[in-house]
Length: 144
Image 1: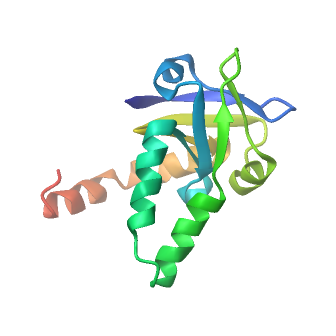
Image 2: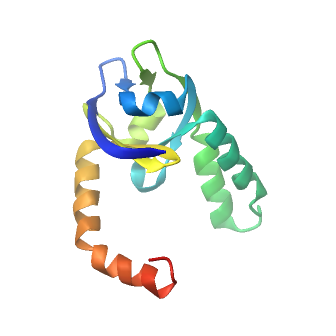
């Protein structure tokens, strides 16, 4: 399970060090793809296969469904952790996410999210201001 928040620098060669606490569970090979809110999703290979299989089961008729599937699958790249625990972020994913310099790397249970640090800080502040409303909505559907 991935939990926690870390700030790491993207080096000039677009390599990003994955937090040591995440490396064992992530494994040597993983998949990074476009995520939601302009962040990147990083999946261990076995979790990626499960996620991709769920995407493959979605109906292709609805335009929104096709768009989301295309976003995730066309934006996916297999990455390998080097001996220092770094991955190479493809240029197109760097442009999508706006990651330059510092990146926020956060654990979200079965995946890791990689954010532009400033965008993450802004998103986090907004979410923190909304926790009461979110808890109420979750309570209404019996989740919280």
